[in-house]
Each structure stands twice: as C-alpha cells, then as structure tokens.
Amino acid sequence: MKTKLTSRVVATTLVTALAGIGLTLPASGATGPSGTASDTTSGSAARSAYGTSHSKALQAEVDAIMKTGTVGVVARSTGPRGSRYATGGVADKATDAAARPGDRFRIASASKTFVATVMLQLVGEGSVSLDDTVEDWLPGVVSGNGNDGSAITVRQLLQHTSGLFNYTADFPMLTSAAAYQAGRYTTWTPEQLVAISMRHAPDFEPGTKWSYSNTNYILAGMIIQKATGHSWDKEVTKRIIRPLDLDHTVAPTTDSRIRGRHLHGYSSFGETGPGIDVTAFNPSAGGAAGAMISTTADLTTFYEALLGGRLLRPAELAAMKTTVRAPELDPAWDGARYGLGLMEVPLTCGGSYYSHGGDLPGYTTRNGVSADGRRTVVLNATGDGSPDMSTQQATNDLIDDELCA
Image 1 (cartoon, rainbow, N blue to C red):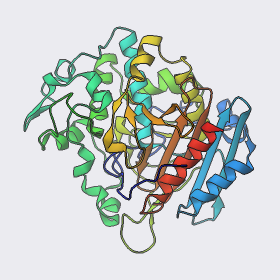
Image 2 (tube, helix red, strand yellow):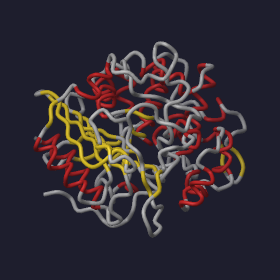
Image 3 (cartoon, rainbow, N blue to C red):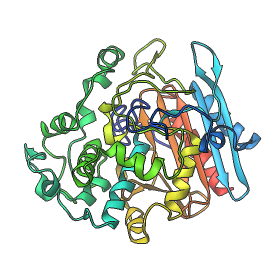
C-alpha cells in the first residue's frame, strides 16, 4: 500500500517554483560537436526518442497522473528487460501536438545532481576538498546578517546543511503570473542571487539541521568556476554531457528558448483562470541550482552512468550516497534522506532508491534509480497538477511500482 501524502505543498522544499530549478533552455555551454545546439537525431538522440517500446502498464500509470490535472506527461522505465515508454496529453496547447517520448523539458533541480557530480570529480582530482570552506574559495561572498562563509563547508553546500536562506523564497517573479511575465527574461548573475540570500539571517547554524536551499548550489557553481577557470555549465558539458553523448541535454546560461521538439510548460501561479505558457524563461535565475534541459532517455543514461560508477571514483560516489535525514521532504517523500546532490527514498517493497526531483512553474521532473543504476525511471509532467498533492502521489506510485516490479 502506498504512503498517503499530506496536503502541504513542496514548493519551498524541493526547489521553490523557479529557481532551484531548471529554468530555461538550451543555450551556451550546451552545444553539439559542431558548436551549435544539437537538434538532430544523432548519437543518443535516436535512443532518446525511439530506443524503447511502449508499455501498457506504464501507460496506465501515466494516465493516472494525467487525471490529476497535468497537461502532458512523458515517462521512461529501464531495467534488465529493456526500456519502455508511455506518454499522455499534449506538448503544446496551441497546436494540440501530442507529447512524444523524445520531447525535451526543463529538469529544474534535477540539475543539482549534475553539478554535485562535477564537484565530486574535482574532489577526486584533488582540486577541491569537501572540507574546504566557502570563504576559502569565495572570500567575502557569504557575509552579513549573521552569515559566515568560513563556517560553511563544500560538503554542507551539496548536502543542504549550510543553513543559508533559500534565495528563491524571496524571488518576486514567483509570486504571480504578472510578476513572472514581467521578469521572465531578466538576466541574473550568481552574485546577485547570493546577495538576495545575504539579506536574510541564516536559518540555523551550519551542520545542525537540514533545509533545502537553492543558494547552496549557486555557491557550488561559483566554486566550480574558481577551481577550474570555467563556468559550471561548461564543466558539466565537458565532463558529463559530451562524454555520455547526451545529445538532447543542455546546460544553458541566458537563452530563454528550448530548441527542438519540447514540452511547453503552463502555470496559473495559484490564480484563477487558465495557466499561461511559461516555457520561455531566462535560466540565469536558476543557474547551477537548476538551469538544465534534458529528455527521459538522456537522464536515464546519466543516472545509469553515475550510479554504475562511470562518473565518480568509489570514494566520491560513496560520499554522494551518504545521506542524512531530510524531514522537510517528508510530505512528498516519507522517510526521505539527502546525500550530496542525491535524495534517498524508501521503497514499499523494501530497500530504497536514489533520486532528485525538480520543480518550477509548469514543469515537474521526477526520477528513481536503483543503487547500482541498473533500474531507472524518469518522468516529466507539465502544468500545475493537483493542489492536493495527488499529482505527487501518482508520480511516486509510478516510480515505486516500476522499481518494485
């Protein structure tokens, strides 16, 4: 029997609407071999869209998600017996085009696992230590109002135990449809986003509690740039996207478009009336906290490689999978724990899976991966879904059923 979720929304936990998320789209740092954004069905692109068979069982679960009020859904489940897909609804209300397996979408805070992987690669190379402080790398950036970068470690940033105020909780653009439309194309620097957080006192002393804060990963991206001389998006592209041939995955900077066939996002921001199309958006508002775009197949390839030990050395992968309790996430994932850019969630059949969801206006990304990476489930749903968390429950059920099958 599935655990019943409470009605408390997860908006301020796993990526408050839009900035711990995968805001906009395919821009710089996300180019194909020719130096232009990949939009062809080559390499992993073919498998992204078509390298799987349709599943009636998975379709039934997708249909259940659609009944909770979503606009479109794409889902992929991969295991020892191969890959299967199912879709529902439309990718674009204006054209009524159906959602397709290979459609791109904003992965929001699922981007954090990519960023954490790069940071842990740097740890394995000896360029960064998890015990380094923010002040060591970014002197004076975290200061004022009781904030002290010398007391916060890289590990605490990746683990969300820094206590830093979540900047997206003070982001006017997320308050209404009008505010979103007015600010959707604004370009933000990482320094500006961190400065929003520094206007607030920390939520707790570093290392004493757990609380999700997008500020942590903006700082992680800044440290990656200091350590490598390259922006976080360029390092993600060089170290993960290109080696794994993730032809439909991009780490954008300021481009507000999603290139190629993609899902459109829609949100009403809690207001009455139909939702607006929120697809176009400047991803700098999310940056290293969530500005990436991908597909279900590309994300599957990434998770298989990560949990399968192909991206990190054993010590760093073990560190990533070392979790602490994250009670703030219980309303959505009862018993959830959090490691370094990875969440751990109990399975109803025993054991647990690894995951990192992502939310922003109009897009919901969910996933589940076995500890060895051999079984993976990835889905994205567009629209606001249900206000009573039945959408969240339905996505949880799909992942749990697939991984327990």
